[in-house]
Length: 109
Image (tube, rainbow, N blue to C red):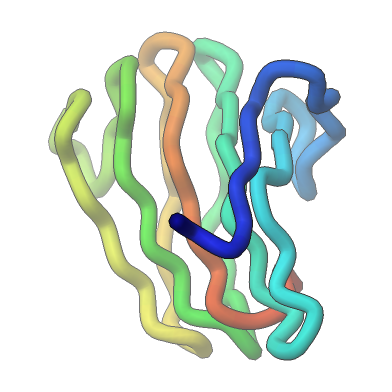
């Protein structure tokens, strides 16, 4: 059995670091500060290019259509951005739901 189990039911969505983005925290690593979150992007929003200075980011698109560098990606796409690497802008062509893991604190620069 897993030592930690988390269900999305009963948890509340929180505002993300950008307007039109919400986070539902599934797990927070108290040692590293890392988080595993569901992220919901409203259709039509653009997240500007940015850097996560202290965490690697892995994103798995669960639903919706997301544009990166003029190419549309859908459910089943996995993205990875090493810490300190500029990435984006991200454009939500439809509402997008992703499972996102930050292996350190979620900070944006």
